Image 1: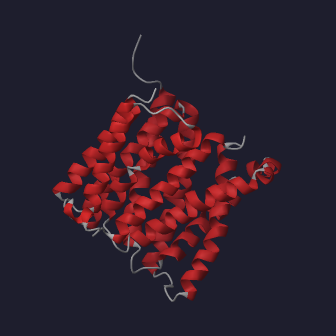
Image 2: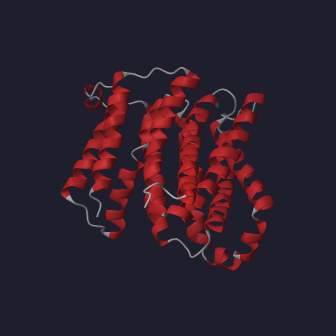
Image 3: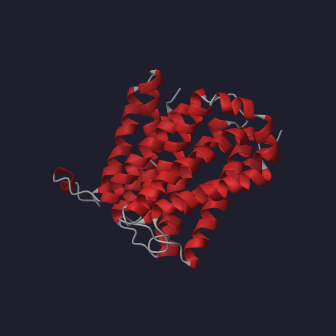
Length: 299
């Protein structure tokens, strides 16, 4: 009997690679948006675009599951606000202060924060070797934040953007942990509820940006970035991920998320010409290595 993966599984793996590639490209788009439009406006326009796309292509499914969506609206609203709206806003603000390479690598810490969050929320057992994985990953995070000079940590001379990304990762990990008890909705309907929540909570955030004098209308390039992040990482990638999960399961699909920091680093260097220092390489190895240790002995 052949050990080659079935055609559906092979298609799912291709979808997962393309999905994580687009999520890695989101870090590059965040950096490219600097000077083209203000970060909080980008978040608002991004989720406005996704809501429009969902209204066009998924309104039937959303209407069919509306009673269940309405019943769980408070929880979905909080998850969408923190996991999508605030997370993206912090990422786009961070891009004003740090490299896209850093954004991508630091996002690799999310699975570790998920592990810690699952322990805090559900007392999910954590083995000693998993603690080792957490420690290895966090060393990688500290190396990126300190640019390879750990003495800067003692002096608290950390890059403002890198700190924001780490905080954003903590919020996204909280959103991921909350998915464990998600409402009994289809993936498309759940995503629609989260996207609407992200859009609604982006409105006051963008209003604050205007009041604070930080508003910048999109340039032509800014509109192109809005179109890209709305259509590719936010809409098509999410749909592709849902399809892949249906075919190979969430466990196998989740492993592919570890490709995001790798794709982000490669694209940042190739497209933006960013510097990739020795500490970036070491941090990437430590972040992914720590995740591998923790995941390998998860059961």
